[in-house]
Length: 169
Image 1: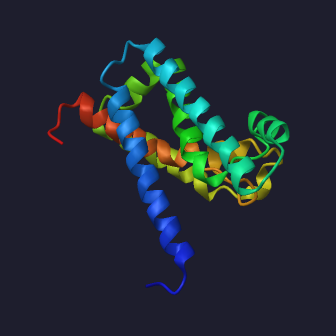
Image 2: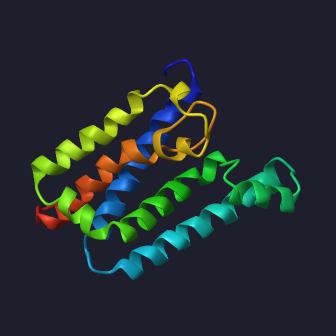
């Protein structure tokens, strides 16, 4: 269709990520006082990330299991098939810590849009401003394979807002 299957794959991947972030926000807003539940979900998705990332490194690339696990835990390598689980896990862990702040950010349509646009603006910061690769988890970097958390948080807030405003969806 576009002459390059990577473009289609990338497009489908980012559509799926936006949908999963929206559903994570929608699900998180069902119980704003359940910090423990959000924390458990975050840990679950991080463990899911470690499991599938380890399988990917060992089964596909035939890397040493111990070395692959050490690189995953140290966040030196985030394999592409499991990076969505890492992003969702981090958003649940962050939302468990900032549960009340998420509620205030998504309390009105105006505040949710403003916060989402500010977070989306992070994508326009040049990669050269950051030396530490873990920043790629939050803002995205060309040399660090991970779905950036901050730009997709707008979809999380949209899901949070829609459930909170009791809009039919």
